[in-house]
Image (cartoon, rainbow, N blue to C red; front, side):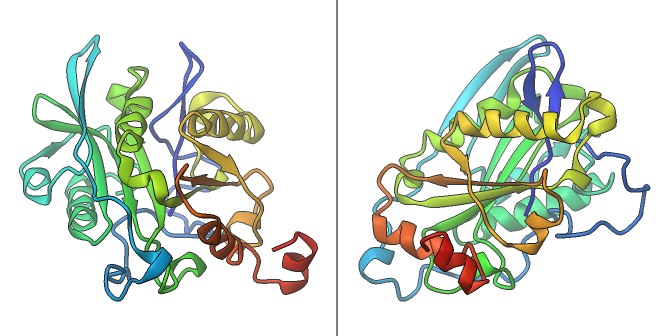
Length: 270
């Protein structure tokens, strides 16, 4: 659905999440709603044939990140039953609008979904960061049936109390060390009205550059689209990761979704 970025001033990295003040607190924001579960995701595992068949199964990866706060366990494919037992750090608040229980419920839901993957950072049994990967919602152009290899990195957040520790990079590294994503295509978006511009002291284009840089380390590249939520602001991000083993036919089928305007698609060679 979207990503939130925050700058690590000390090292110039992109970390966690934050909400800018360009739109007043509590006001309705344009574009997609916050990452609170994924409504309308269907089971895409049924009826797959030919190029739709997945080449691998998800594999669990963990990493212990040594930090000034002590070791933090970073784990992908965190199971729902484990998530349900966790306490959520109070610095995780942006997607849930300061309701940790609501956020935890959403993550449990994603972890149970077909294709869902919740990557967590855990310190002393407390959830301090997360990444959510899932199938795009059916109501979106990316969520059409017959694309079981197309996934969305829908959210990334690091607690305000655990910034500047390298958690964002660690979670993405653990996620994409999993060969399961090698033949998949993933998309992710970043919308300016969710960025912590005030807290970082950056303007939109600086913030945008940091997002491109961080995700670029894990194979994401910027692509053009006429998706209205993306085109609403020229600084918005639309990033795509094409797995090294993804077939050309998958790329062609994904590219066909980029432009609803058929003339634009023809001009761009799609």
